[in-house]
Image 1 (cartoon, rainbow, N blue to C red):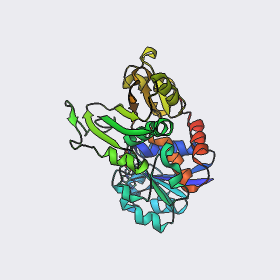
Image 2 (cartoon, protein in one colour):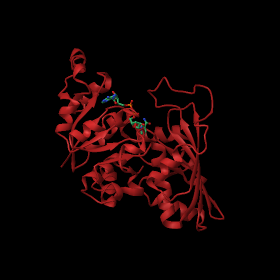
Image 3 (tube, helix red, strand yellow):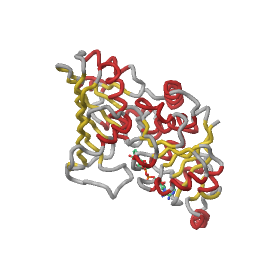
Image 4 (spheres, rainbow, N blue to C red):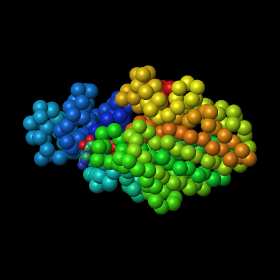
Length: 337
Ligand code: NAD
């Protein structure tokens, strides 16, 4: 049994804690929070042992009637692996403390790639983190790109990738983010940071990315063109994508015309928090001409990295190979819409 703690019980951390709790080979040692807010209360109600980020905040939790089991240090002492899901840049500040506790660490994509010796996407490079002491799950956008490009590269060979990432302005609770009424090249530099991030897990891919931020919170939408070393027809590519559990083909005929429909479907079918763990690729829009493949995919930024975090824990623990881990994670979470 791998004892896992989650440092930072926010958007990603609470989802990862639930996903870890669903694994037969893992247990949640505890979760930690800095603020004694409603998420802290829900952690306790979900049955997790809650730890405060700082000792001087223990009284704040107590004052709100939220029971805590101790501080982050206590939690780390009892764990084999910590998933760091603190805000971008904060994970790095914990690096020395994690080393003091001699604990394996899964960082998130908001950290610089230098935070860990490897970056991670379970479909692209699971083996590189096998038995390692730390890895970094790449960002939601990069995870989405890597999952789609890896099987194309294996099957047809990929000579280049061009992707425009239409990015949500913020998560639903991020009321201080924007734009409210604009369409913003973001970043204005080309390529955007997503191209070098993809190369941290697929170093040989020739990739150019551009980013645009829009006033939406639901999902990201990618418009992707891949130059293949072969010229399959669109139906062959559809079948190839359909064979990948974390790629979900959707059709406008089923009523999924946009990201809101996908999220509504996830909620209607009882997905926890309406989470969509899979890349959603519009089957109707898959087009190939002279080996140039074009498709759209929607990425639920709050959810797609969750199965990846579970697999990253297993990779560090060295207890399962890539195929075994992905299959176990997918089965326990119910991946596949
Ligand atoms: P968040 O702000 O929703 O959650 C962060 C949590 O960490 C909060 O519960 C906060 O109380 C806690 N925290 C803050 N400071 C802390 C400290 N010093 N010690 C312990 N806990 C502390 O952030 P998030 O959106 O979940 O992002 C976490 C990481 O995941 C970032 O690296 C981010 O870039 C990455 N990520 C986010 C998304 C997304 O869409 N939200 C997608 C993929 C990856």
